[in-house]
Image (cartoon, rainbow, N blue to C red; front, side):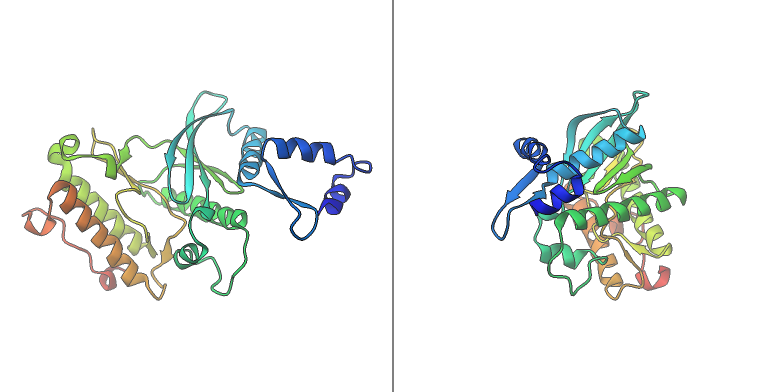
Length: 268
């Protein structure tokens, strides 16, 4: 409400309006008078707040090109004062329906019906940063977690391409090795009490020179104690089977040195 904005701003009567007008011009806030005269923060405005916080902390010095677009996030190149390039992931949970988000995210209460997309995006960022840091500290091949603010996660740039962009000619004789790493990490997560829940060719990066993989995207991860953990684990494994068969015509079961499938109840 406008009255609340004026009260919080501490400016003289009407003094906040010129600032609101400037924010409105740049689409950082949205005017809504359906119920009463009010303004709300837009996703772009939330982006600016997060970026400004990183700049104030000295974490970044500039924002570059967009390098990734997903159903629920955008990823940008950013640069530090020292000239190091990092990745900035901005969560966008509003791109999917609330029902789809609630079914995938265990931190959203099942009884919740009305929740701000900006708030849900912030929860996703906090969870992803926490998981990424914990996994990195335990030797998992994940990006280095640098910082988090609001819905934005700052992390190291990954050397490689999403597996979905890698064809047989780029991996050559490394297909079996990449498949083995993918299944190894799926099993390692379960041994540490976690199921990825979105473990597919879009969330596995591969360096085609070394054939080393990096796992990304963690907000939807659940505990192996989750009621549907075994089903979700098996679904992740089947995603790998389908992709490697479709893209590389590779079946581990037909490879003498192929990686055997892990069994959930034996490792979790």
